[in-house]
Amino acid sequence: MRIRIEPITEQNQKDVLELEAACGQEGFVESVEECLEEAGQWRQWRPVGLYDGDQAVGFAMYGYLVGRLWFDRLLIDQRFQGRGYGREAVAMLLERIHREYPGKKQIYLSVVEGNDQAAKLYRDFGFAFNGERDTKGEYMMVKNQE
Image (cartoon, rainbow, N blue to C red; front, side, top):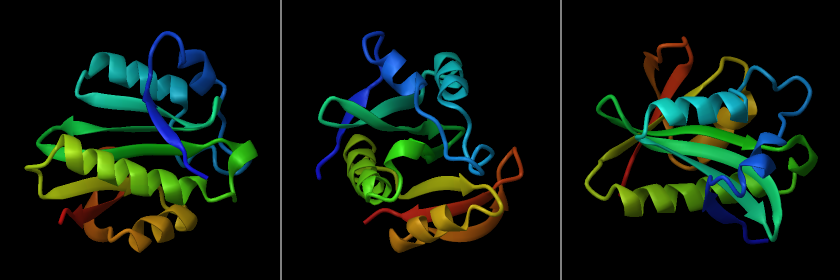
């Protein structure tokens, strides 16, 4: 499996707007629609679709905002969870972030309380809780870039 990352455009926006969290995960990440609205207001965000061939399997958003580099959102559609897409997406997105922001030493993200599966995945990639909470009360994690 090798996913590809595509910036969101008018041509592929419909693909990612159809992506949904699995039942019980709805509060773990904002909807793609909410993310795209936020990206429209803050041009620093980089919303991207995650594709396996021509099939959109996920969505992510990252960017440099408020003095920090954020790996802000990751959603793997409910139909494609449990197949390794999340792990592959994190690895590829971290590579991309490192290339696009080479001078930044740390990458931040936040995790909703109870989203233990995501927290474990991020820990596997070197993120650690730093004791902070974001503006929505989510627990923040940070990773030092090599």
